[in-house]
Length: 271
Length: 311
Image (cartoon, rainbow over all chains, first blue to last red):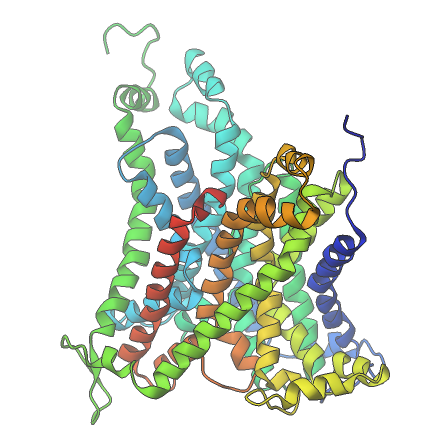
């Protein structure tokens, strides 16, 4: 007979598992601590003193605003494109078996399964071959491509759980395809699409590897941060920006989790 | 339309009728925009990459010569470039093994013992680091590994600095601090890719039926024997699926070795520098083809081992 508590884990396993989780989370906390340090030339621990002045300094720094604006713009456009394209593929995949279906699903996953440097270098080569100058749109091309799979994953998982019966019921009651889409499909897909969109936004906002190949001289916020990591100026200001970037990815992820709870939509998605 | 029960009310209804009679039309409408995007933007770019890798750079003018040649690929076999490739593959293999070892207890605990709120906590505990900002994570480790950083401080306080000094004195890994040594690069790689190993591993472990473990125990196996002969073989597809991520991501990364480590070259860094400052796009493209080939071999081997059932 099985007891309610189930088998007990050994102490060693518990320590290893919890230790592993702590290992994943503790480093991030340091980012927050160092945003308040009074030491700006080294990473001295413990910080010699604490101050909140760096938030004001970061606010005044004129070189942070244009990258932030560009990052938001790119993420917004890429997310919108990815949501349209990802939902379309998910709808096609969910409703039918057709020739080349497996190949299409591989094609959707490929931009995220291959290392970012390949996607980046490929786009860079294509811009070189076709003499396309770098612009906001060259960045968007890359970002939208790897964001499609995120939206697709979320949408297709929801569509699989959605019973085909309600679509047929809608048709039986006289709705045409567009009315069914508007009144039946969209409300049911809504939260999954929103979750996918938020994850795509977080991914795009934070992306640096592909972006360095497609941005030319432009600077997104991650590229700005990357440059600061190589040639630091006021180190705590980098921490303030890091907190901003962290929040801009952390909050959408948390929201996406609560929107799709109960499913396994976000599991196993690679970056 | 004759024979319809409801009167036709406009274009929307006529299209609905068309979709009903010919489902292929709707499918085509759904599939073609994303297919065009991925086909043109992504596959087109990959083709451009291949194309560029067969071009070469003119040694005198520094311009790209658009003629088919294998010269650029031959350059990959120079000693220094082979060094880069070997170093990257060894690093990727080491990172994959370390991730598998660290991930196993977390995945096993989450799959077998965590219940209710703990289950959710473990899931979020792995998902959040997986998705949160990559650069921020790398930056956090720059803070940790710096000579004056928290790790050095903790070692000094606990009188264990000799461990760090000892590691940094190992031939081939010499460096003034962890943040400029290959050990540091390795640690950050393991940290950043660990969640990618945990998730597929956990999925595989969750599918191991408890009855099998009970049967194994009933037949007299010790915990160790059950682990070796039942759990591990059944979890293997998950391990391989996870290793695809850790291996592939390490192969292509160029940010981590650039920020943490002794500026020794990796494939990703070579690609980045060749296309940027050096302006040698053909060689950069040829270098980028290397991880694709390695991953193709790896994926073929993984497919034989049945790893894709666990993705």
